Image 1 (cartoon, one colour):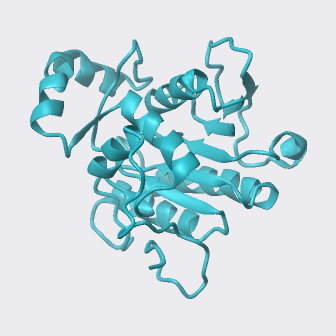
Image 2 (cartoon, rainbow, N blue to C red; image 1 turned 90 degrees about the horizontal axis):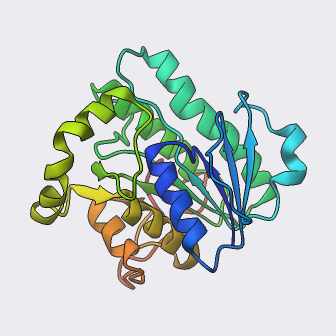
Image 3 (cartoon, rainbow, N blue to C red; image 1 turned 90 degrees about the vertical axis):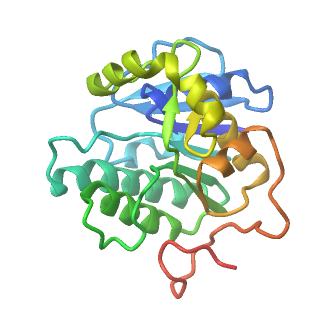
Length: 246
């Protein structure tokens, strides 16, 4: 498999990159982001660029991929809706639209968040913007699009968040997260589980287009999609936004 990763230096992206490097079925990893990962590996090729809106000059390098793991994101703290939309929605759509032209048979995995608002009309700004982004991505004509909605994320294997506020949170809560993961398995997922679940979705599909923590945990074990629930979203202009085809 050849996999493109956006945001491989973030906490979730680091987890995805680690699992891709460890997976013998992954032959090539193409990392795109604003800063280098600091990782050296024969599988890994990196493009570091400030402009994440325009990809015309990279088209020769963006073809031939089986999956994209889109892990770019930012905290909405202190942001207005226009700025948060630009970072969360506009950059994701620019990348996804460039990739789908070159890789229509690709599986696209978008890391969103628990509580994202598919109606796009709720009171919580970040949830509306995430929901709007999910809906737009689900309408693109990929082979399959999967939206991951993790809750609390436990970083493993030395992975750290780039966001100061999150680092402070993990410094305080870190010792409690393994316990929380056992007591509240539907709310806590690790960076390792996220990375492994992305790979399973890319290889074998997922049970539904929008995946919550229980789905992510199941996929991280390599569990096949449930025959009764298995469906991937394919573009249909008449399909309701954010809802997979039956």
